[in-house]
Length: 236
Image (cartoon, rainbow, N blue to C red; front, side, top):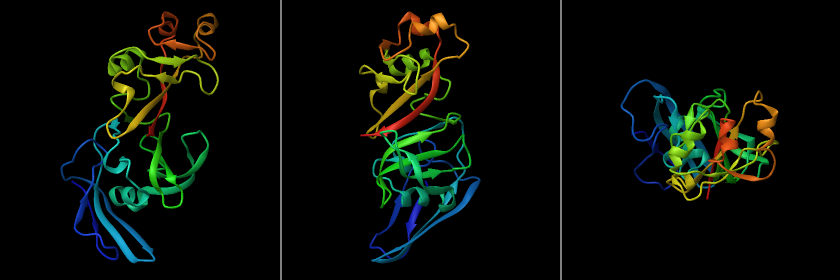
């Protein structure tokens, strides 16, 4: 398992073990290289050094632990993935839809990019939202881009509620109805926005457009065969 070694400065004893991109430890193999996080503050100078294995398998499974645990930070992520693979940004989506301080893992790779917003925009600690691109190779609880209505209901174990299509908030799932996707291990919540084909007949779209809430089992919703167009994770 990857270890971040705190070598100087702060009074941190021993070695701290973290999770990796995939769920669980990975065997030794190709590496992104050695990640070094160098910091200094009023207490002195310190650094973390870690060898970061290349992630394997797609789509990658996002979990609210290890590098993405509720107590993670910008320094922790840099220690795990390598300092050059995590950049700070001021335009990361926040829980309310605005933009603010965050850290971006692999910013130049749309399929692997993960943008994390922070509750503490100065210390870069306390994740509030994890954002994925619309072409991401990540998945959450087996749900990824392009997953069908049937895939979602199977993962959830039951139908769910969603707002009608149309507009920026159309197709967003509003209530998992106590199903398996109601909450993720580690204290996170999966948020999904469904998309429908622009080629769908206007008469069929008209039946499920607008602010009304529908069940996923509604025949008019099913007729449009919506798929996951976007998803993100919110922290409690």
